[in-house]
Length: 310
Length: 317
Image (cartoon, rainbow over all chains, first blue to last red; front, side):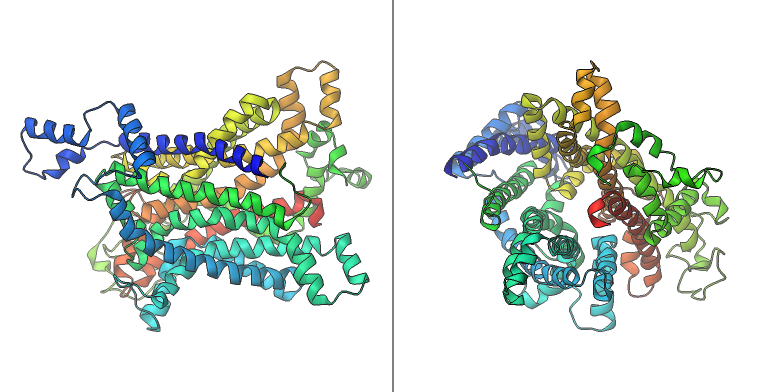
């Protein structure tokens, strides 16, 4: 187990550097100059621009900039400074991240409860009316792009029924986040429901299920323990990679409901060519992704004792 | 029927479905069919498959010849037709059928002419991704070792980058964003998905007896890869690619909606939805119709992919 974790952690290192390098290169290939943008239309004389570039380290070759950036990040947890207003990136992210995290966690909870719930109902009644309704419902949810779903919900519940406010306030409370979280988690909810359903319907026919029923276990135990535990592996795999995806995908939902989270920071940094903010953000998302995928792999062994990591 | 025993030859003749020839004797259709032949028989009875194929055929027709469906220009706007002054709708197929947008342009004409952008992006990205990702996956799966480790780490890197975010960064660096720029951005980030699927399929297939037999007979690497492994490893790739096609169309619209994909004067559903948002309360139809078309298109491709998957997976039958 320990050796497996160590090997996985070692494998993460090239992926971590590769991803940050890729996003760093992509950002720095953007045309436009953040220093020039600082001075607006009026501009500044070349000496000032050069001095500012030197101060920010932007006059060095790009590979050096990358190395310095990574050194500061790893050794000092310093994600750089925003060029426009001189705020440390960690501070900017510290403001935006909790809001997005709140949204993502709520969306995750919704997808977990309702996704698995619908999946169990469908899986146990495979081929019958309830199952077909769930399949059609989830198919529709999957087909409707997130931003369309967002506006449908906004149109119906905010404008026609007046149940929710169309936009979320700057200091959002949890109840305001409900509608955006449903929009954000809707797609994954449908996937979770379908995965659970297929996996359960398949395992219902397994030999161990017949054995469990034959030896007279109560139905609750047969389904709750024997069936669920065996059916959860594909679902857990999906859920694990989804936490990071929810945070990255929150851009659209935040845009629709005017939430001041990571999405707003991303949009702003792209249009202002704030390379360090973007790289810092993506790096955090990458770390979330890498850590969750490791945890998922370790969780397999809990769900299926046949899986052992030597 | 056990798919492990099927031969490459059996797969090849499945490309022409056994009973498509009306003059073929019944006995021929009754003989043991290949996985693909079986799947085809299964598909023809599947209502999801029929509905999605008809929808996709219609969408392809619309994108190839939009003028067959409407004579109105998607960009000709006359403020006489502005939705506030002309709320009543016309007969089916006429320019005023679905109303007009803020600039007095026919929503129906824009709907029809916007199809091409979405369908082109979807098909082009899928084609590039399948070929590039498929070849990489085959190389990784077949050769294994260092090459596999290298390619797998590259796919890991791409998987770490959130798809939408990466596409936004790439697209921002282009000042003029045409359909092909969007195709490039989505394909650049999307190929690794197919690589993973193909790699897994090739690793399973390459241990099959017929591959060892071909090797023993002295077949070259290229021949083994393309004649023996590829036909047998293709099924999951086709399924994933079809479902992903719907996802790419949705991604294009999302990016256009965020102002980072296609932009006016290109006619596209995403552009129209994004323009319709401003008038959501007074004229929801401007937003609604492109949204419905977009969702229907994505639905059609996902339904097709699922139907093919169910037909190819003997466990689900």
